[in-house]
Image 1: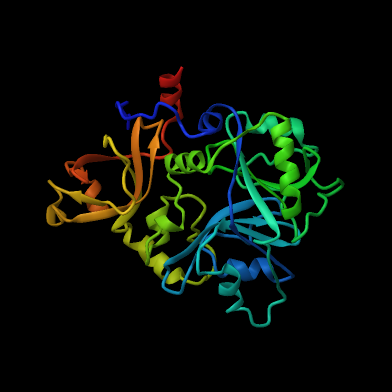
Image 2 (image 1 turned 45 degrees about the horizontal axis):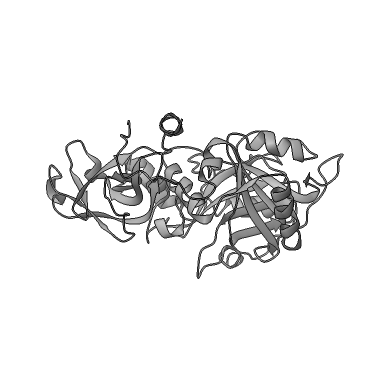
Length: 359
């Protein structure tokens, strides 16, 4: 879908936004879920609690996946990174809930060690079309090439086979290739005490820091949910369409019965989508999305609630994420948010249009 430019496009994008989209920038990811599960039974154990197929992964590879409860409702969207020593599990921070405690509840006799590293590690993202080239010129080890390939090891950085620990600007780090801020991005993890030195080196080498607003804008343009975008009783298929985050051929896992039943039905009743509007004021988080016409028995009713929003240079206007009733996106449905028309747009938003408007 082509997204038309409107007069509400921001004159000045958030600090670092243009670098994330046009060259390279780094941004702080803040507090994260960071759990390493090691031991002989680690991979098999974790495989029993995620929708993704973990056991077939080779060391150095990774997959997105969901952790669900016994009813199949999503608890966490995560990246699962396999190493020789076990599994790194990385995801956004969820207030009031702990992945380590969730898994330990089911741990009986398996040979496992849980290492909750949220307080010990710091996480940055380096992203942009020039990110790989910039990092390659400042790193003493080849970069991960494919999505979620990584250099993550045990609870402490360990040397790759036949080499020294990965050094970035002279600082020991672990890296994974990610697409959270565009197709060319890297998750960079350092020890807590090394973060300041790493950031200082970035500044010395001229890399731009993207602020939180820039990172949030890119995240929404990518259509990637945070915990605040995932309502209670959300199902994995409501958040993704295809991909490797849900395996329908692996063995049993917690919540599988519900996930498999939804797959057999062939559809869900709602989807996480992005909406664009021409509102002169920002989309308000918590604003109701309504269907006014051609919506059948949901006409005039609330079809969803905005959970994240930004003023998007790519869309040329305001964009928000919403868990929207599937019937509300049928042809002919008219969506309105706080009195203004809204339209469903595909994500990731097309970067090429923005470049054409900016150049």
